[in-house]
Amino acid sequence: MALALFDLDNTLLNGDSDYQWGEFLVKKGLVDPILYKKANDLFYQQYKAGSLDINKFLDFSLAPLKKYSKVELDQWHQEFMQTLIKPLILPAALALVEAHRQAGDTLMVITATNQFVTKPIVQCYGIDLLIASEPELIKGEYTGKVTGIPSFQEGKVKRLEQWLKENNQTLENSWFYSDSINDLPLLEKVTNPVAVDADQLLLKKAKEQGWAMISLRQNLN
Image 1 (spheres, rainbow, N blue to C red):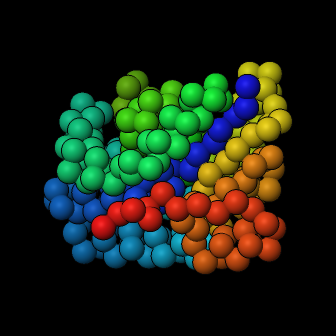
Image 2 (image 1 turned 30 degrees about the vertical axis):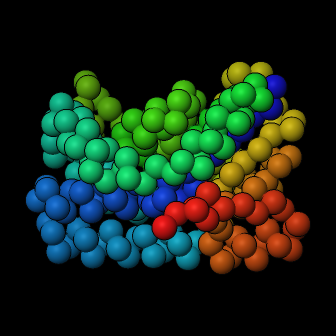
């Protein structure tokens, strides 16, 4: 049984859920519309360039969770799913996940985006296993802080290695699908790295290494 790993944002999704959650907060008036959007845009550009400071970003992105109750946040997330996320779900991505499921592979999404944002999204793909950056919860409410190692760049490798050890699993015959140069550390660890609608930096690396390159968006209008 092989492990099939999937990045989420701009891989299984035709967009970035972390960025879209920030846009949702702005549209709902739950954050300062000017300052928050400016920072959200800047962090997203840094992410795409491979220069994001994940700790600074998580301080920023998790701060709004502290301002509201988990009940309110969960209700808003349902609206977020319907209005911004469902339109980003790619039929070809669903088919890819299903192909691995039919092959008997163990399915997992591994993403830097925090678990509050991503868990309901991952469930839409019928995937139970998720490694994501984890927002701290105390007495059932978010503190605005992260707990544990953020699953970003080398952090994805560390988090996955911890999971493999705890579950007596290996990366033998493993797959990892990603669009981003930020995932290079994990792509270099698996048996079958696949660049999916890759950014320019990852595309260059994939061509140099002879990695598989696919698109899940080629049939979109």
